[in-house]
Image 1 (cartoon, rainbow, N blue to C red):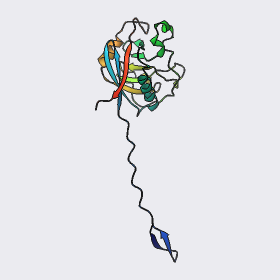
Image 2: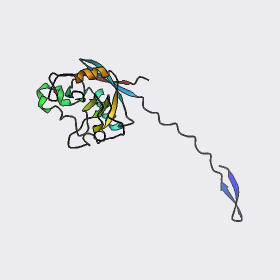
Image 3: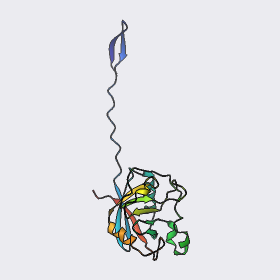
Length: 194
């Protein structure tokens, strides 16, 4: 390192020259955008995942899907014209129907955003008593639901196949329970279409 002479308070001193700043480090490479493809008896639909909104929820969803955790689960709750809800691991077993809606919760704290609950939004279900109780269960909004903002974590949006989601939403129900099983046959993760 070279020296520079400087005149400080009447005294000539030699000080080390300042080194050139290091080159900027390359920006962190953003992970490739991902989609989840959900295969059902009504057809398939794709969810564009939004780690920019809810990174922990997306990470859990991807991990669960890659492990086959959604395969064979059902859309166990349908509110016609409102939402369809699925992802409960208990729903793999028809003998546990009385417990549907209770499994896979209590794993994550909320990650709220300012995004509106518009048609096609995918959000984490939770226990009614705690906003910080998300997990593997999720719901898809069939029609705009502004009252849900600030209560649930949005982590995706339907990118393709909303007609399939609508078909699931038209399943006959008893209360909010489908009269017949509507299974997620397989959920896979893929790179998002550009």
